[in-house]
Image 1 (cartoon, one colour):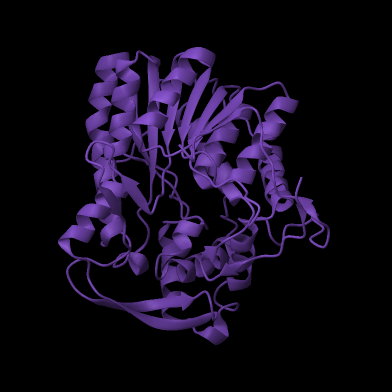
Image 2 (cartoon, one colour; image 1 turned 180 degrees about the horizontal axis):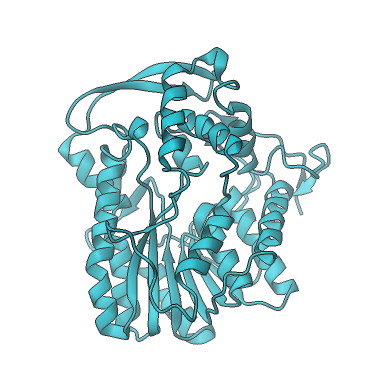
Length: 406
């Protein structure tokens, strides 16, 4: 045992520790929301690649509880050591697994590098042993780097504009100041590397492997999550390196769809979700400031929607048992960003974004709310947790297969 009083170590968008009890309460709250949500779907076996945080965690919980499916998650999280706590995602998975066991549900996790052949083969073995053919596969990966198992080359993603330098309004999360941030354009190598990490190549490898191993049920679906976003973030997001990777992910979905149709009379789809507060999104220039303004506007218009509510809507509206195919927009994608991208919402956000200053962060936006939710991702500032008490930082579970050191 290792009882510690855990205090936050968060500098800007970098968090080096997490609070186990705070993360547990977060998952309990998500699970409680899933209880009240009727997805209308019944999924026997589900695989979620990127299952420990954000939309991946929400997908795991919704499919495991609301849809009654047996869920296998794949993620890469850091267990605790004597020197520091585990990552927030590690504690999220621990608590989700504990609740599933308590309710006699099947939720297992492989903790390892999803890009590696070893983890893919371990997933195949686990599916054949304890699950069976899959009805639903979700791909929800946001990673800073990827090692290509075929070449051994490690690629790193960058957050840069393409074509020309860009200076735009952002917020320094270390000083809480609104400032103009100059960014140099990405090189061709940086663009290529970002696509290698965040594009659709790995998703396609997963799906071809599952087809080859006969692990997809008839009319099985796979979905990957993307984000398009507004005009104010386009230079550093959609028109930047990460946007180029998202375009590759989306194109991969369009290529996979006929393959899935031929193999199992199924389909591959892209879901364009609303923006959400994550450690990954906090690192993107302009995005935290945009999210602060968007929060305020959505609150005023009563259009806020949590990540788990988004995924419940995805399953209910597009992947119900009695509805054979999802409803696609003209661009061929599912759109759950419809409330965020409403014309009146974006017009108001654009106007406020242009005017906002350090002094008006909580007048034109909800920066305090943004910061609170961001710190809550790591289990800090969560209602009901006594942070003055020591807590056990070493936590594990028999239904988690840890391959993180392999």
